[in-house]
Amino acid sequence: MTNYAVGDLQGCLDPLQALLDKLAFDPAQDQLIAVGDLVNRGPKSLETLQFCKSLGPAFKTVLGNHDLHLLAISKGVKSATPHDSLTPILAAPDREELLNWLQQQPLLLTVGDYTLVHAGIPPQWDLPTAQRLAAEVSAVLRSEDSGVYFQNMYGNHPSVWREDLEGPERWRVITNYLTRMRLCTAAGALDLESRDGLNSVPPFAPWFSYSARKTRNNKVIFGHWAALRGQDCGDNLFALDTGYVWGGPLRIMSMDTQEYFDHR
Image (cartoon, rainbow, N blue to C red; front, side, top):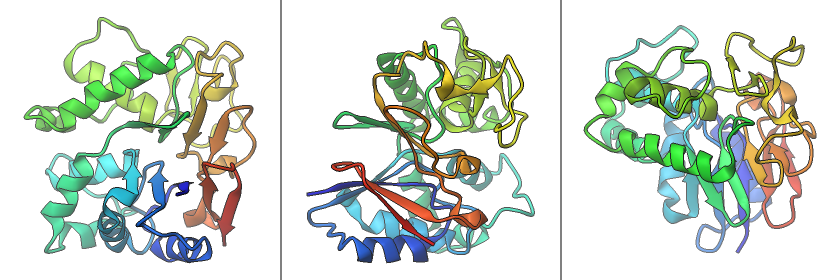
């Protein structure tokens, strides 16, 4: 059995299937784990969701910001933008089955000694804190409060975590850390305005760049940041969003050997 992690798919099914064929992926034995953003921008968001769901227990994913955006649109909380490619999902006969399945997925996964998350873990959180808070929001998504969650999901504030936050503000900042974060301060104050962050201006820097980051000794697999192009971000960090939808490769990593496999 081999565990594989894959970067942001964003509706790009063909390169995923090409990589799985190359690896002789066997869903009866192997497991594929995605870092979120299964949908949007690419040409086959519907087919990507259907394929991933069809893998059953051989597939796991965390939720990304595009996945949450799809769910918010499906509930009438948000309108699609001209850049979205989600209409085929919303019009599909198996729409509700797919959306219900997607909404059950977590914001963070621990598989062996790896932690998978879409955007990252803020420097002030240790792994147990990240696991606890991710599970808290996942429980809301699976509850009767999910409607309140989606109605209040969008927004950049609060920009920093406080334990005394409650309700929608608490859920929003946890979600922003785990699904939208690129830049922050050492104390975890978010900059959600910068688009790529490669030319960050102090006091903001990439979330993973702080020497005192509390998860620096944990193996973290993440996506979300196509501008990184999968570059080496430091020990125990594995950036898998290589920007296929923007002209880069699609990347899968063997979690057993840490070997990368790319498809262009």
